[in-house]
Image 1 (cartoon, rainbow, N blue to C red):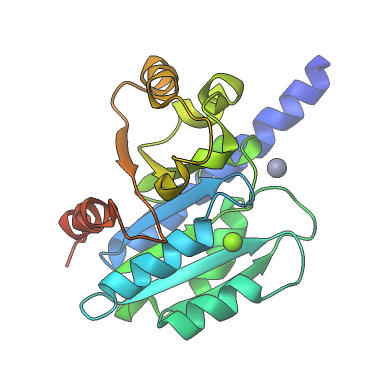
Image 2 (cartoon, rainbow, N blue to C red; image 1 turned 90 degrees about the horizontal axis):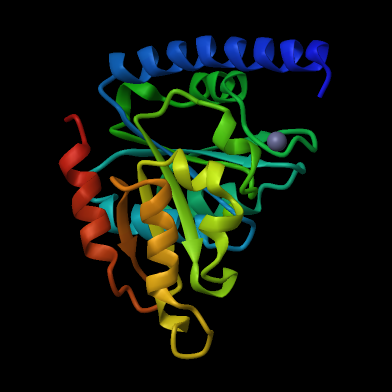
Length: 219
Ligand code: MG
Ligand code: ZN
């Protein structure tokens, strides 16, 4: 990249970070715990979110911001049917959410009556990692069918997250996936990351993830 391009990119990212701080302040003001969920398309973001809502909705009021590159409300409709407040953000083809989109999303949610806000980022393992949104926690969902080499191929994403969900563990018998090789890559990049292997189909491993959220709720 030319120096000029680098400067423009740095300016965009610093404007994004400033707005992310505003989002963080707003979420803190209402004592809301928040998750930015990132993954490749098809890793199971919506499935994990729906199952999380199902497990928590009797005790926790949840809002979801759904990022999509097209004007489809498929995921937002599922979330609403699942019992949470949903806001749909159409990125207009953009391949990630930024903090101005989250600001717009938060403005449409009843923050005073929420305990948890979940953001479903656009399916992409590259640039969502560069855009801070102002959430408490950054969560990456990897899945067994994607293969065990993803930490090595997308180090920026694996390095920048607080929590890693390894989804679709029910497919382990049918798909070649070397858990040790995967974990070795994860540990090299992000030694402190919390890992939850789980399956949305069988429910295996889901309880520790739900308990982890419960511990972090602020009210
Ligand atoms: Mg989805
Ligand atoms: Zn992008």
